[in-house]
Amino acid sequence: MRFNKFIDFYKTLVSSYRLWRPEIKNSSTTSSRQSAFRILRLGFGVSILVIAGGTLWRNKYNAISDQGYVNAPIITVRAPIKGNLISRNLKPGTSLAEGTTIGSIENSGDPALEVQQQSLASQILLAQVELTSIKTKLRDRWVIKRQIQHYLEAQTSLQSNYNDQQVKRYQGELKDAEQEAKFALLEAQRYQELMVKGGISQDAADRLQTNALRAQQVVISKRALQQQAVAQLEASQQGLQLEGSRTFSDPFIRSQALDEEIADLEQQEYFIQARIQQNLQELNRVNDQLQLQKRAILKITQSGVVWSGENRFISGGYVSTGDTVVTLIDCQRLWIDTFLPERQADKLAIGMVAKVRLLSDPKHRLLSGRIQTIRSGVGRVVTGDQVAVPPPELIRRNLAVRVVLDTPEEFTSDEFCGVGRSVAVTFRHD
Image 1: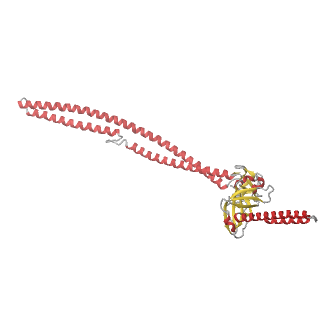
Image 2 (image 1 turned 120 degrees about the horizontal axis):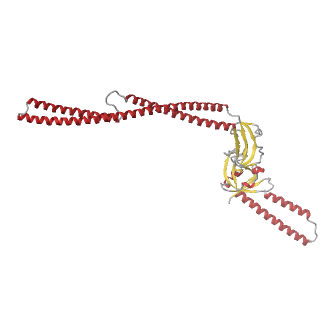
Image 3 (image 1 turned 90 degrees about the vertical axis):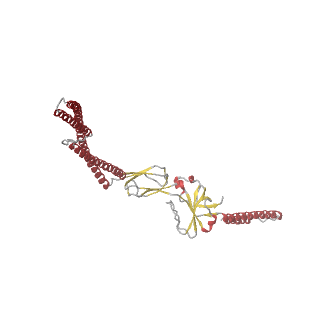
């Protein structure tokens, strides 16, 4: 292209010279002028050769694309719920910072959720009434159990005291019997000696011997009664009864029945409390869901520039869940999409330096960047991103090259960060 321009310029210069040249009779002057113009022609020729050589060298080692444009990812703000939209008047090209509130969606609520809310509230109320009844029964059963326990403790204490007195009584009787048996035995032995000496008859001696034997039997009987009283004492101390009508039986049975009933009531109380807790959690979730369904605040989660908005989504308009409210472009992630013939693939490499010239730009800006991706194929290139400007239908054997700009802040929001502008890109090695 530049070579053709120099040829045209040279032809124009020669034509101007021919029109300007006067008929001069002085041969020396004419010869000087002819020499000067020969030198001029020679210089132009050398310049043309240098430019042509440089162009050929550059075309051999560098790649040039006149088909390309500035692109950016799209940020889509969608309606989280259905309802009436109340939004700001967002004009394309408006810059919005992260966290900016752009409007809200109002909704009367979901009837199904409201029915579920009322049902859960009723279930919780009934469960709380049932829980109150269970707690009352538990309180009454514990009062009865404490009364029975007090009765058992009192009865055990009294029975133990009684048996202790019995033990002491039999111990005293045993001692008396032992003393009597000892005295009877001594008397029998003395009379036996007298009988041998002839002092008393055999009958009297035998009678005393029999009395001594009876006294020993009384000792044995008293000792048995004393041991029985000790056993009764030990049994009563453990809440047991060895003889007589079982006065401990009914309170013990009643106490065991109360223990089982209390355990059952406590289990019911636990399950009711768990059910109430579960219903409360579900009710909170439904309340939160209803709150979200009734009103949703629309905020920008990432800074960008308004790219487009739906005309029907104005204040007071109705939107459905998932409808697009506004789209923005991310000016911090600008790139260049450009396309070259596939025969120039050997001249390109990832990371290669790219010089980007904005076509029809009054500021004549020249941007720099590096190759991020190189894709080849036939037809439409699938970028894998939601982009502001989709790629065109490509002719066969073309390369799609993405160039990441070094300084995307070169553009302003009122010009949509340059997105969509046509560019010419020159790729060269460092």
